[in-house]
Length: 445
Image (cartoon, rainbow, N blue to C red; front, top):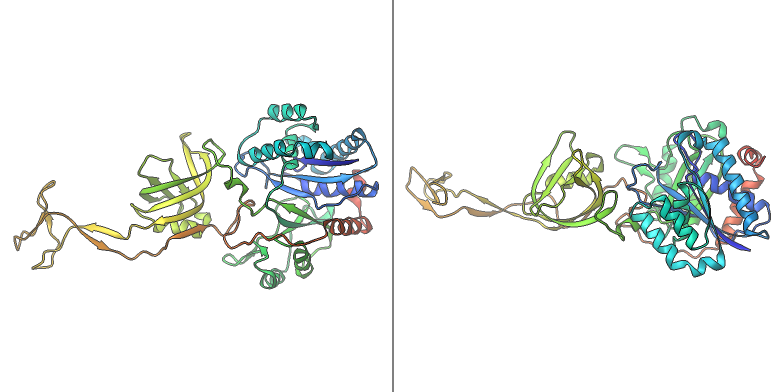
């Protein structure tokens, strides 16, 4: 029978990774003569959730096995339990893994409902009870705890996509620093850009592909063509022997969080603002206040070009800001800017006029009484208007340090013609043939 499986929350702050777990689960299914005909999907959910670990990703994949639904659930459940106990140690760190399994025939019938669930998971907070009720009403087989929310959401992802190639470390290296030849990253970047994205920070002269902490991921390559990502991987010189790699189809870099906007805490929103004031606060962050009592906007120093833009804005400018709604220090709402579109620039300034005779600045003659020159006795009714040059132009601005879901302005979301079944089978075959399959064996015993 054919099934679609979703898994989530198999990482922890100490070890493990949901993508790593799903790859090993796919390997196990492949060894049990299950047919894998598509690349697994890496589905990033609401990036504003405060209790997420790292990228808030869940995984789904389609599998065709000569076993029953109950037998598949037992295999997924056992593998999940062993991974969390032996690898991620998630039970000791308040992680709550989950899974969701659905017969593929029912999946086709539930497509619209699952898509709506995914859309909410990308844009809002879904309570666990609501997810359980959704699963029960739609006969989705679920297990575990909070991770089942992301697991169900991953079943409903069917939108624009890009690809990510993730490489994994041998277990003996998980607690060691990652070391890679930076020149090899820059070389790959120069060859394959713009079909590869966010490889290197040329401003700080450091790689962006590396994972951090003690998780199993060594690096991740993001782009629009999996074949190019494999070529890129073969150029990059990682200074340790890697365990295996996996390629995922993903909603990263497609702006799904900007499609489903809201107005509550931890949702993404977009609003037009006529600027009343711009304040640079301690640390270099910028606070923008609108003239119609909108929630204030903060543009963090770390957003670089976006922060530099914010410092050039002034009263009277018109902008559209997209970003996350967060609670501020006094529990009021504040918008963390992710993207700013400059719609109108106030390139004029009103100033006290110059005396036409002595060319000195006039003085106020009193409230609403105009201006006068005490020396020459000249008079003017109002301030004069003067055009000024601006260091910014109309257009769309965003930080070069992208969030997972953020689409780079220049990126073309092409859909290359690839044989996904051949690709995933080649990857899984290489995984099985590697000499050291310690982690796979560990959670199979």
